[in-house]
Amino acid sequence: MPLKKGKSQKTISTNIKELMKNPSKARSKGIGTLAKKQGITRKQAHRRQAVAIALRAAGKPRIKRKK
Image (cartoon, rainbow, N blue to C red; front, side, top):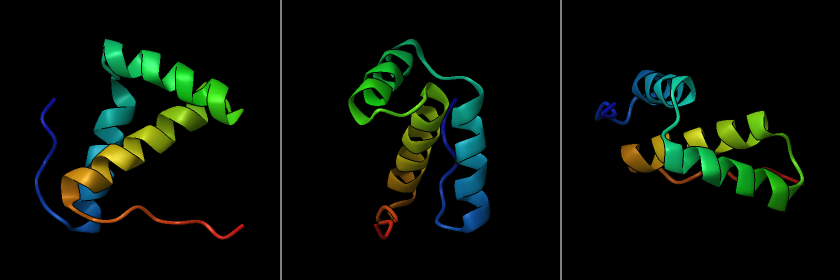
């Protein structure tokens, strides 16, 4: 499951969809840990992790949310 290269929104979205479809065994464990630490559901943790990986692959900074 190699990620596509590129910085466009379409490429990032495609990579996120690919990462959401089939997590690796190591990522599954990390998703559970992330969910516990942040007090969120596994689905939310899965999405956050997929977005972070896709943005890193594109070389873009993560999006910071306002509190």
